[in-house]
Image (tube, rainbow, N blue to C red; front, side, top):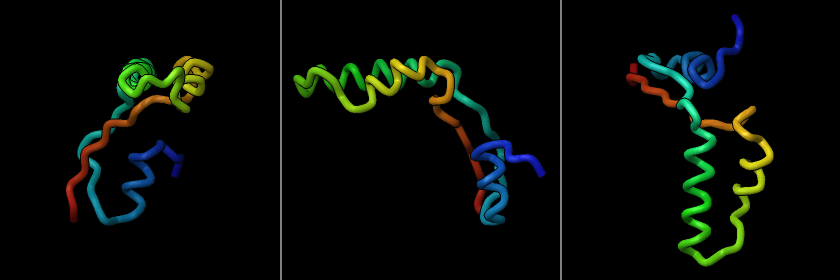
Length: 71
């Protein structure tokens, strides 16, 4: 069985039934905006995640949105 990401990993636990799973469109950009806002609020020049997200440009990093029902 192919690895389809978090949905597959959750399903293989046999503890839950996955009812929905998708990647958040532009999730990395939302994460980057949030990191910049937090850094500004904390009066930091940069947070640890800003450089990582800027370098990635959405290639690998995003958010997975999952919903599951406990068996």
